[in-house]
Length: 102
Image 1 (cartoon, one colour):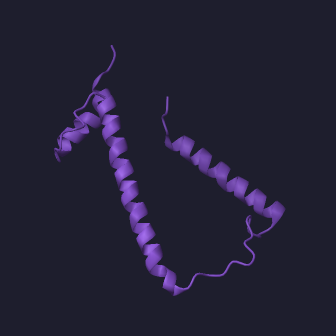
Image 2 (image 1 turned 30 degrees about the vertical axis):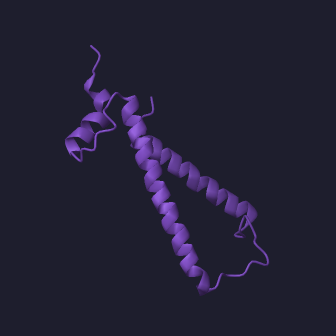
């Protein structure tokens, strides 16, 4: 269950490309969402965009780390440990692979 094999990837990719080509032939090359009356932001908005992007990036890193810690804790690993050991991370991450039913 959940195996994402190359065959499934290729089938999904080809289905997506085919759907895109068919939609473009039937509806034309016009954009799906037309934004009329929108102006391009000036360069004065660039610092604000950089700050918002940095905050969003740090938020994404924080979410990823919290999600990873919660996942490892639910698998029985010591999520509170601050070890930077790659071996510890691999052992916790792939603990389920060690159990092979007979």
